[in-house]
Image (cartoon, rainbow, N blue to C red):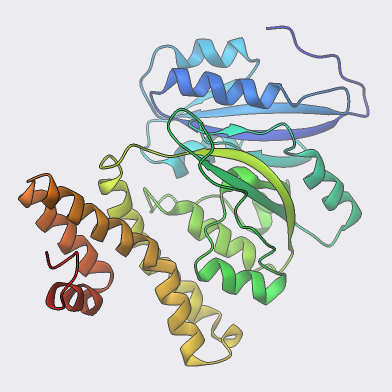
Amino acid sequence: MTEPAHTDAACCVSVIVPTQNRPAMLRQALASIRAIEGPDLVFEILIGDNGGAPDTAAIAKEFGAIHLKTNRPGAACARNAAFAAATGAYVAFLDYDDVWLPENIRPHLAQLKAHPELLAVIGQYIYADETLKPTSGPTPASSPGEGNDMLRAMLGGWFPQVATTVARMSVRDRVGLFYEGHIHGEDVDWFLRLGRTRAVGFQPTACILFRGRPGGTFDKINRARAKAGRRVFLKYALGEWRIWRSPAEFLRSYRARLDHFHVYFSEGAKAHARAGRYGAAIVGMMDAAYVFPIRTVVKLLIPGSMRR
């Protein structure tokens, strides 16, 4: 692949790409990164690979990326292998199954240069199906605010996407690497540590197409993310207790943080039941009850779709 010409004044951004055994999707992701490059902007792409696909190293070479192998499982380990080796002035992220949009990166860099007090800038994402056809508008639709407001939004129902984020490389020392104790949910923990700095801006630019997964293939991952999400919420929500203006606000944020998982498992249980997969339906209801036990019992007792 021919690399674009760069000037000495080009801004260097290290891009962290974790991957595991998905060479076709990885090629799409890397192509979307290189498509944004130009004389003013050069990317150091670092691929953290904890899979066993033999094509990954060749794809990395094709796109001029640095291939870093790790045997430790989980996206956090793959990201950290690349993050630790990054040398750019800034750092950005992209998961192997998503793609950057052409408007990504430059608005973030402009905002960081205009506001030296900011450590990072987070943008918007667009949900897409497995073929990358958009299924939503830019999310979040409006700014989550700054400082404590942004931290409350992170603790509540806002799930920032790591691939919409550009940070100064000093974030590696100030916030740290991703916590490898969470096989899933490590990004939530990292974002809350980032939010605690009160040095994060918002960029109203659609940055990525966030690829969805076919229904029924996400149960195990969401189960792990729900457990991690509860632990992470309580850790940071109680550690930052001064941000809450009332106990009711704390409880609303707790519900908002976990509501996505409850809805996912409840709807999945109903879909399994309609298809005659009663064992899977029972597991789905148990998962929903793990998230919100009282709410699940009430849904089973009162007339409605869950009871049916």
